[in-house]
Image (tube, rainbow, N blue to C red; front, side):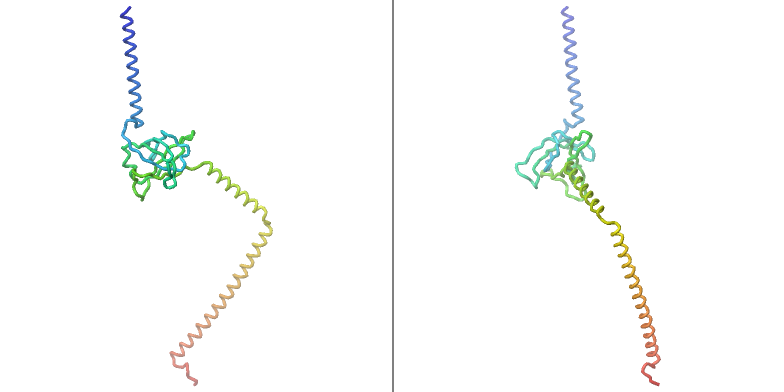
Length: 223
């Protein structure tokens, strides 16, 4: 009886230890995939509005997950007009890629509207200095965008209403009169051009005769 109890206890202990080992192995594997156990460095990006970004949100460079948001804090005083500091943990193995000129913005992704930090590479600018604050690009405010579309729609509607008030027949008459006036002007210009051409031809003939008389020496001869 005692042997059976000892066997049960032994098996229970084995299963318990095995479970703990599997949990540790699972956590270690997931942590390695997520970069929990890999060396990191931090960068500080400043925004006016983080648009609902939360700690733990991923940071992507060209679609590759290179880190995550460590903290979001208000600054004691504004820096270059920005008042919110987003500290991002970046995997050290991607440092070389991020040392190039980069731009940081907050992006919405997925059906649920998950917020993340999107990093873009820039050309022709100074490399990033991680010892200084990095100025981020403000996320697009959907509310402001909707207001702008609404204002544009109202302006378009008002323009359409104003156009409807225009007397089309009267506008057509004005355009016809304008066309006639332009035609008369064009005809007048053609007449002027014809007269100028005639004057030019006559002048040329006269100068040709004078030149011929000068050559013959008969310009001043009376007889």
